[in-house]
Image 1 (tube, helix red, strand yellow):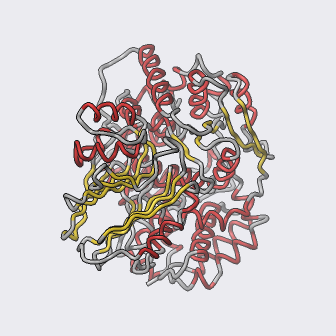
Image 2: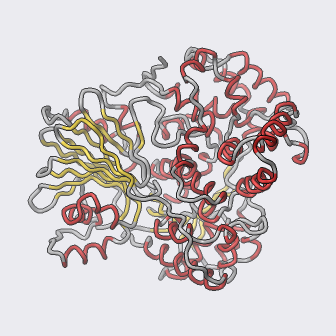
Image 3: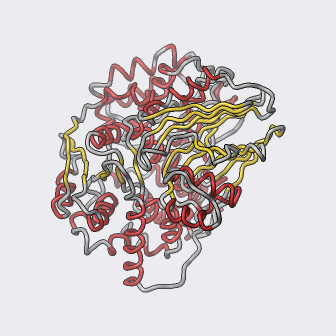
Length: 634
């Protein structure tokens, strides 16, 4: 697990500035504190920071083949590297290490751009083939590991594991991308391929980039997608048995390490399932880590302890106070761009705890996306049933009018908060789902943004992100479509980003067995009714886990990794929010309508409306502006 950076002159004319490359590399020191190295040749510079996990003695990077014609810098793990090493050895390739990094080099020499089809793991790498004068970059199937890049007008191509490494490159503009600002205030993060800066991008999951000397174009290709192709029918019992076998295999493949290894254990279904499979296969007691909260509304430690006792894990737990908001500035430094998921705070703390005990931790991320575990899937399917009863010509005016005039009663019991539902029913499934997951609805963003900024958007709306993905979806099933949208947006943009930055801030490697691409492919082939069944999400997953986990774990109400943001903003963070919302730094951007900002603050503080998600996103945007250097607004 590492941090990688690079500079490539597509014109092949210029030497690389070693000092600049060094600054890029050291900006990611936290990702790899064990070792670091640079490699430079005419027109090319690679940098690498290493967190030693596999082949500690000889796995240094950049790593080249025997005659130094192909070299690679790599962040991640190739879990099937031993099998690939055997296969490539039989094909005549000679290995000098036992490192998964070297497998990438010889896989390229054997299969070229198709090498990525042979990898099972989480990875982001850049490879240089001197003979072919070609640079090749790849990012893993679902986007566990990040890759940022920019092709500058002068022909320099720069890349890195974190956006901060690119921002140390002098020629890269700090100008904000207006459409990314719109995306951020809709989603709470900036979905791939954009970043907050107009010149920098994220390589999308399951994609590669090829560049050649003398060709100033980026050739990007998608090498994988979630198939959602129905599998031959199986009985529920057979499906349960195969699911456990595949889960067991995925977990087993990710237990390879030469350093202490453990798991996160929240007491939820997903992390508990991973721990159960680990305990079954590990020769020693599994190290498990969890944090508890000193507020029973958010605390799940009882369930984590139950699983730890059942599987006799060596359990480590710490209690976190519910006023742990001192991390706000730290988070802005970590994420490099606006990021509004407040669960980044407890995620940071559990990674901090885990690193005291282990270097590698397995997590349960991906279970909700795979098996339709989020409540929003249930709500969306209910809305879709209502939509199907009325033709669009009737549905839009009826529910659109109800949504427009029904009061937004945040203070009222849930059953009387119908405004959002009416608004969703007036839309199609994609727009309705976008409306449901947005942290700030269209009507709020429209009032939040200044007239000047709305003109800069030129009619762009954040829903276009989902519409573009929906147009490419390999399924017509409504539930599968929504899962596909989350795999393309929320999972890489929010969940995996959150865990990568929080874990690497503590030099901790996190692996995600539920997102093994072979496991994801198989789960996608299951009938939708096996995932969401009778209003129960994760139906087949929970049934298959009955021999391993109690009903208390499997069927309790989901709490999630949440914190009391609404209370914070009315209490201990009240002054901080006012200071941020009305700061010259924020207002001078020209993005915001000051009158509406004041309205949101006053309405939230009074308790008349809940603007916590909106105000938190504004607070984190202002914090990003404050900790970033030389941000340009226009």
